[in-house]
Amino acid sequence: MSEATDSRCEVKGVWFVSLREWLEANVAREVTQKINARLSPANREAMTDTLPSAWYAEEALAEALRATDAEVTHGDREALLDLIDACTQVGLSRFFKVLLRLATPRFVLLQVPTMWRQIRRGTGRVSAVPVADGIELRYTAFPYFSEPLYELLTIGSVRALMRTCTESTPELRIVHRSRDALTLRVML
Image 1 (spheres, rainbow, N blue to C red):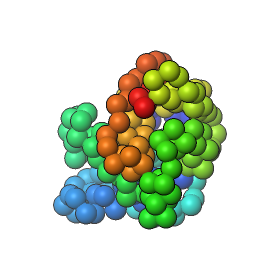
Image 2 (cartoon, rainbow, N blue to C red):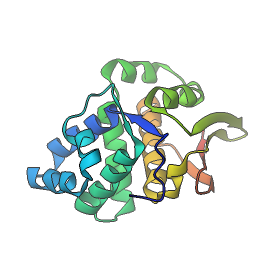
Image 3 (cartoon, rainbow, N blue to C red):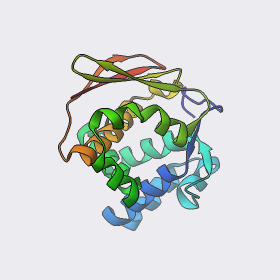
Image 4 (tube, rainbow, N blue to C red):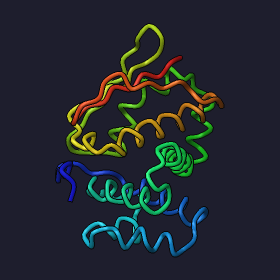
């Protein structure tokens, strides 16, 4: 288990469903089997028998990201970022995509704290703070930021939201990072 393990952190199953759907569409079945084999028995069910609305330990997602990185992107940060972006797109319902296209980028970013509460529970908070050149998403008290892949998970997810909203790739900058916090500036 990772140092980041925190039993108080949980994530909705939609993350696992989206990752599994992307894997089924983009990699050989053997690769998916290797990913599942890398998962601890306690966390394997999150990938193999997922309910989108159920809550799973955040450590299961961390393990799934590490296994996917090892078996699919082989440590290539840009490839993993693109994979996370694509999985986020898979997870966005058609209805939600239509709503995102109708909203302004500023409005969507200001809703990120609400979205966070819908897909995560336990420790960890996020606030959206307007700044001169955009919006800062300030994630705090989330121990999984000690896991380097969670920076990519955050960037990829926000990038996919913004691309859906604006149909262009936004400029994103990490302006602060610590073991349990991350501040991502989205330039508008």
